[in-house]
Structure formats: structure tokens, C-alpha cells
Image (cartoon, rainbow, N blue to C red; front, side, top):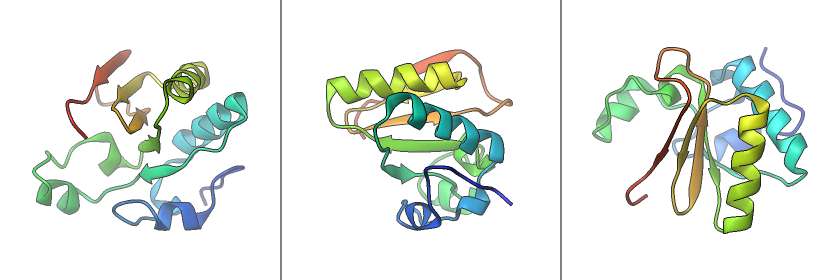
Length: 123
């Protein structure tokens, strides 16, 4: 059973697409809890687990970290919050981070490139 200190089942139900805390890997959630602890600021999740079929229906590969239950997107609208979140994610052990205008992607997939940070073009 996947558990979290800071994130409830309802927060995953509100993600797009809706999912469950139980769809996620415990290691990912533990790192996310650590990052949240470091910042001292609540995170609003906008996306977490995505099925392979849902991912493909949106024109994606269906093999991304979200489909493995190893990725989250965190709402982010200010430069200060963006800095605090990225800093905390790195300290918590995430080695894959994507930065967009309105969210930050973090994942701990072991089957994708490590120690990378990218910018999203558009949202």
C-alpha cells in the first residue's frame, strides 16, 4: 500500500487524468514528501499516473515516467516558488525535472535518461 505524509487520495483524484495514490510508486511518493517537507509549502498536483492508453490518446509515446507511476506535475506560477520547488526536488533525490510556465514535472524513472532538466515549449 502506497502512503504519503502530505498527499491524500483526493489530490490524485483531482489530477488530469484522474488517478489514485495507489497507482504511484512508493519511492516516488517518498521523495515527493521529502521535497514538500523541505519547502514547507503545499504542492498542488496537476498530473500524476497516466495509463499507457491515455498517454497515447494525447499523442504521447505511452512509455513516459507518468505511465510507470513515477512522475508528477506540480502547479507553479511564480519564479520564487519555481526555484524553491526545483531546489527541494533535487535535494530529495529527483534526477529528472521539466520546467514549464505553469508547472514543474518531477520523476524518478530509472529507465529514462538521468540527471536531466528540460524546458517545456508551451504547456
